[in-house]
Length: 178
Image (cartoon, rainbow, N blue to C red; front, side, top):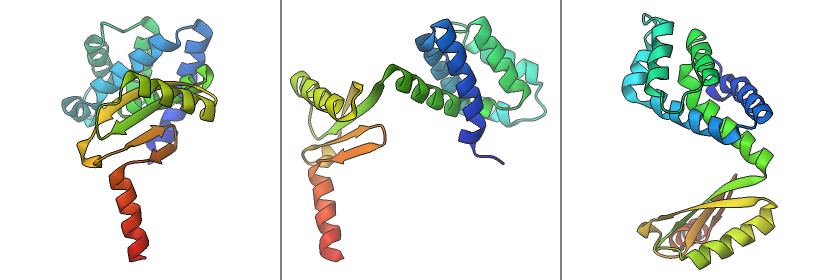
């Protein structure tokens, strides 16, 4: 079977083009994230994988669960995915769509994982430096992970900067062992 990301790509590109033409990039992003949550549920995965379940009923179930954010075009997408037995790739579609959206908006999601809470001032400085380095607006999220012992790890796109104490100790350990 083809890789899920390969299967998801044409759907993500088509939805992105539709969203861009209609000026609804954020609305589609929210809809796809909701659909990804719904279809990744263990019970829903069982239904999606069951080939004896009527595809139309499965599509309607997903549409009903997502009623709060569902649009007519969203319903068409769900029905198409169900008809083609592709509801299992919704999370990949959402991920690829968000990457296309970020590229179009010249933004990047960045995550700071720190040993202790990062102040708003520190976050602003990090975002500013990342923006200068990446040439994009940066949206930061922060998490605390005390196992880092000190410092932080910054992830932005495919870039990872490990300035954590535990990361430095691991590098030192590898250097000494090798």
